[in-house]
Figure 1 (tube, one colour):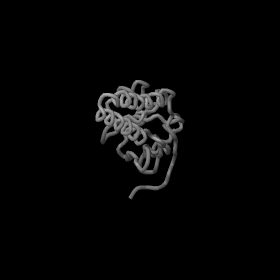
Figure 2 (figure 1 turned 90 degrees about the horizontal axis):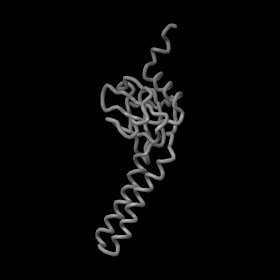
Figure 3 (figure 1 turned 180 degrees about the vertical axis):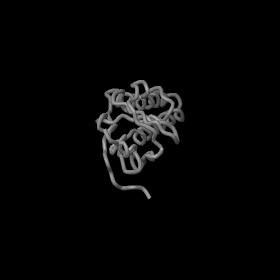
Figure 4 (figure 1 turned 135 degrees about the vertical axis):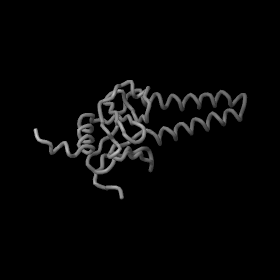
Length: 154
């Protein structure tokens, strides 16, 4: 049974380039649809459908919240979708590079080139996230992953 005790919650940091990039992709296919409307109706409909698909896709995959529970890290995506990472599968959480947002072998939920956290897992692919309150989130996550280190002497 999943734990319902929420330890910490944060929102993603969104860079200024995110909205123009997402809307740019959508506008590109809408514009192509309008252009093809005069030459090929089927192709125009396809371009409009791709624009709608991209809008739905981005609304579902862009993170809304990061929640640390007693047993898992939950990345709340759009609608009812979420990505859960069991805390026991996390080896460490550490500061990541800003280039990891674009070039990384793993799962990327990065919405900013600042505040990058790399979650290194012993099971499953590593994950990149960008919480708004970087230091506090990293401290809370590491405390949840390694609770015994709080009681260590010194």
